[in-house]
Amino acid sequence: MTEPVKVALLGCGTVGSEVTRMLLDDPGELAARVGAPVELAGIAVRRPDKHPELPQHLITSDATALIDSDVDIVVELIGGIDPVRGWLLSALRKGKSVVTGNKALLSEHASELAEAADESGADLYYEAAVAGAIPLLRPVRESLAGDRITRVMGIVNGTTNFILSAMDSTGAGYAETLDEATRLGYAEADPTADVDGYDAASKAAIIASLAFHSRVTAADVHREGIAGISSSDITAAKSLGRTVKLLSICERVTEEDGSESVSARVHPVMIPKSHQLAGVGGAFNAVYVEAEAAGQLMFYGQGAGGAPTASAVLGDLVSAARNKVAGGRGPRESAHAALPVRPMGQTPTRYHVSLDVADKPGVLAQVAQVFAAHGVSISTVRQRDRRSTASLVVVTHQAPDAALRSTVDEIDKLDVVREVISVMRVEGEAE
Ligand SMILES: NC(=O)c1ccc[n+]([C@@H]2O[C@H](COP(=O)([O-])OP(=O)(O)OC[C@H]3O[C@@H](n4cnc5c(N)ncnc54)[C@H](O)[C@@H]3O)[C@@H](O)[C@H]2O)c1
Ligand SMILES: N[C@@H](CCO)C(=O)O
Ligand code: NA
Image (cartoon, rainbow, N blue to C red; front, side, top):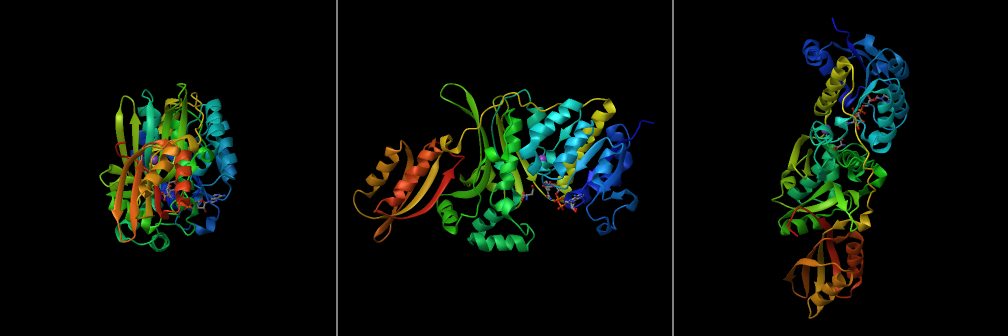
């Protein structure tokens, strides 16, 4: 009989409890898939008395002792940086593979964790950290390892997608919709990490690192959340056949001298209703990957929740266990390209600007002049007359984000501009 692969589970909350269930559900099937029995050796929780539902002989409050016991794989589902970072580094240095869903940790400390894994020959897998159940990191890391990824763009935060979808369908404002999302359990009691874009920025850092063989941290990702989105923004989008989504966009950018850099950003974006990402509603996630040979690929599914996220954890766990049985490790991740991160101000974007202007001769020329002065080329202009004012909607061609930003600041100061109603970046339509 082959030796069992022993697993330590750290944390038994929303995801950990589902992982426990799946591990204990059908051990025979799991053993057949792995080629050896998979033994849950212990579950570290903060308060053992709070878990009467778990097999009591497995529970411990001493995570360090559990990691240091003769386990082969450590599955971490606690979250946050400390104390988890030290625990996982210690496990990896001892040659124990690590499976985690911890995007906060990976988006800041992937480099040292991957180095520790490389030195000892352990696996470090974290499919659950980005887009929950959706297989995204393994396809990027392995299936596309021979291609050249140029862009990864998508909806990787379910909470904000739920809120924006609801604002679009009901016409309600941001605060009201957030309250509703909290009441329905879609938003956490403290929704800051989601609504301010931190969660999506962590995921963008992880995606950009793997897609571009570089190290991008959460601090490198330009981040804007959805708290500033008003019902006027949504209405402005709707009147043009568009909708608003919070997108994570990671791109390979070629500089004028031929060198390359990475742009990684999270911000609200207007996309046409006909775009495939526009149809992604509620708490779902969807990610587009573009690669030179493969072309466009789309990944869609549940980006959060106990069972869906546990599916990704189990997938990683089975892979790591198979590698242990085979006496080796899986493919390592490569950061050899070490591409620099391009500042947001220099990143090419397109803006949609909706203005309330005085309806008199020369106004359009004055507004157009400000765009021209900043080197920003206009793609379309629409004007609709009201009684004494007119609404002017301008969509630009691509220009450096800083030039677009200063154009809007200057337009706001024009006497003929009564109000800047909505300013938003545009993606997913022909230039
Ligand atoms: N919930 C999701 O939908 C989801 C999706 C993707 C990724 N994740 C990630 O998975 C991880 C776990 O998320 P969750 O939703 O299950 O969180 P959770 O808060 O439900 O569970 C965390 C568990 O860890 C335990 N814990 C905290 N400190 C501990 C300590 N020092 N020792 C032992 N146990 C400790 C807590 O008691 C709790 O049971 C996080 O990194 C999260 O970002 C969650
Ligand atoms: N808070 C995250 C959970 C998944 O990481 C979301 O809303 O998508
Ligand atoms: Na995933």
